[in-house]
Image (cartoon, rainbow, N blue to C red; front, side, top):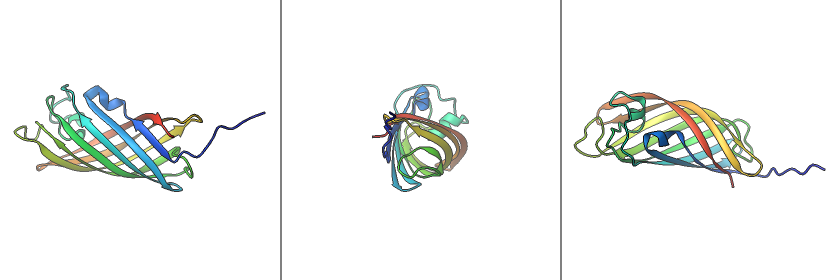
Length: 164
């Protein structure tokens, strides 16, 4: 006899392990608000002194123009359209995000902490396994601006977590 463990899982709580290599802790909470439509909030914290590649590095720019000695706090607020999701956050998705944050000792002006803002457009996929284990990934393009400096950078998404 086959017993299905599948159930409705409209929330995903995930961590992004890739940014940890550059000293950034990033998590996300995503909620399916209607079939196919979800809102996502992803706070991040830059807390480790590590080489992020300098002023024109995609990592530095994508982290709010962060230098080796920077610290920062930020958040991404976004929307995802899930082409297959009716009751769980699984399958392909795409959508935009707004990026905001504050970086100290930035590559733009290290004399004081400065705010940044930006936009991103991402696409990818995610699977929610029967026990709730959640694994996903994707790619996108981001834009960020701080004190007259502008950068465009690629984004790589990897998320691992749980859907209660």
